[in-house]
Length: 129
Image 1: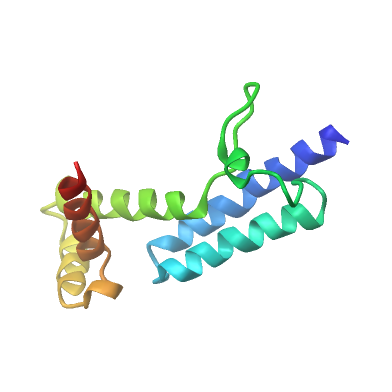
Image 2: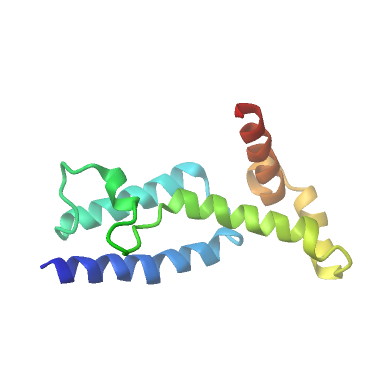
């Protein structure tokens, strides 16, 4: 039974999360939508008896016995948009296509702009330190 549980967690971690990560920079997602995806994932794990309903949900996300824990979708989303913003801001300043994307991003409101969202999150992190 333990082997089946590990296979299910591997399927979620190796197939579902990369598909979501690929779409994070393309599709605008609200925080509530990200939390809902995470909630549905945990619900499915409980439904298929991979996770006990009364067990601590944080234990799903920690690494155990050399295995990888489940990836939190919210954390994956934040990491992906930070990577995209860093790519836009630092790596290819002379690339015309990156400049087109940056110009487009600068005209977008905060909720639709990756660069502005990351800047706001970084300011919030600095203020809490």
